[in-house]
Image (cartoon, rainbow, N blue to C red; front, side):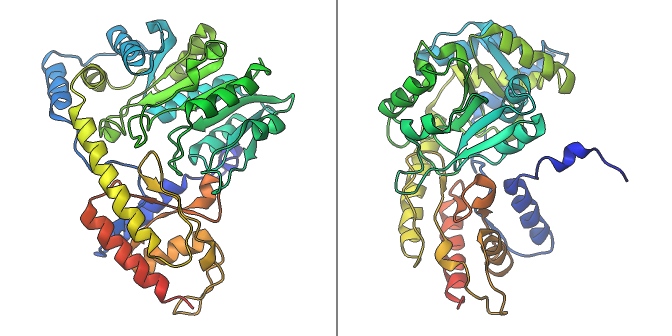
Length: 398
């Protein structure tokens, strides 16, 4: 079958690939411990589910505006003002089928063939692939473990060229958990100020999963706000991964309308019932979210204790999100009991999956090939179990 050449531009997400392999082993009766997916193991809070049930009873079963219900977009504006002190109007908001679609809308609306997009490493696997799908050129800007996987203003300045159209980053970061402080964002903002044709996509989906204090958004700088596209959603903070709702905010009406035009040809609006539930999520009781974050905090402490017991790995304590992202290159070149050599992080992840029956994700897809991502969005029991199996498997290498 002759398929479109578009498919050769980008790769399958490493996160979904490992999840699929884990499910296949599990279907064969193997007990696989999942430390791969970025999905809270909590259920959606009851008050949000009740709002969805009411929406069904109230017959919210028809097409909605592509950009989302007006009262939902107003609720998003209320959230931004209350939590981030950012002022938006409903016409600055576009609701999509997940934050991933918001990112795709933005990239497809801004990036032409030959445009350069700067992405600091490590990054969420989809960033680079959507840029490639749009025909853009990915410019990876390497960060380091020593700098907590964050870039400096000087590094940013040196990466910008006349062809740079977009800068994409997340804070808190998936996969490293890195969080930019207000001072660090201020320094980056001063660089962006000198380049008025450069847009900034700020992925803030992990906003609430922040162990160090107040979330800071680069949209807070008024001189940049027209060029900042803030991406957020419900999946992480409200344990609503399957509900599929994300939203973007930008005062640039022309850009929002362009994204709406693109979305209108792909999916139109997201689920009407999810939209009604989202209003309750954004305006209702935040205590379930706070309790979930406290659970993640305890898991993070335990994960760091367990990681430090494994010889040879280098691991920062993440100030946000629910992953650790250790450098595991000390194990490259080692041999398995079957005599196979582990050449890289891909090999190591497959070894852990097939031998220890623990799913992790190679750092290769995140732009850091020396690392692997391990999620602690799982119970403490499963975390303990997974690390025990990993430690045993690594000890068998020679």
